[in-house]
Length: 121
Image 1 (cartoon, rainbow, N blue to C red):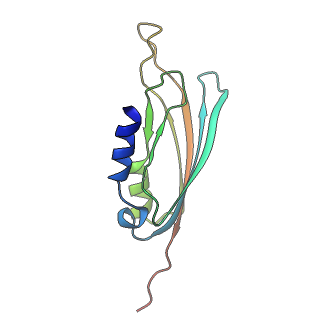
Image 2: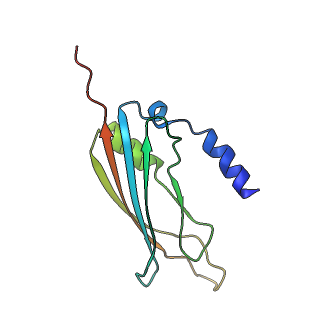
Image 3: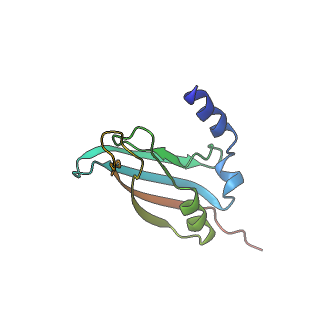
């Protein structure tokens, strides 16, 4: 059921060109590290004009429920037409192994944007 809900949500997000009309391509490179700084996962996703915009990445840490949402960062990046931005965050989802435990997975991300050429008058 979780997969079906995720698929429905992804279909409703729209394409990159409809969300960010001035952007030709976005490349998101993301790395996840354990609280002990061991590399857990690393991936690169490329979004082109007709690709569905899904800028939420699940946490690769122990929590199994956390996610990192890059929607606001991408909106800021593209509104300012910056070429790239680097982001770091720590998952704060709870672990059920202790009374005050949080996942603590570190996420480091670089988002690079390629813009369409400006139209000439």
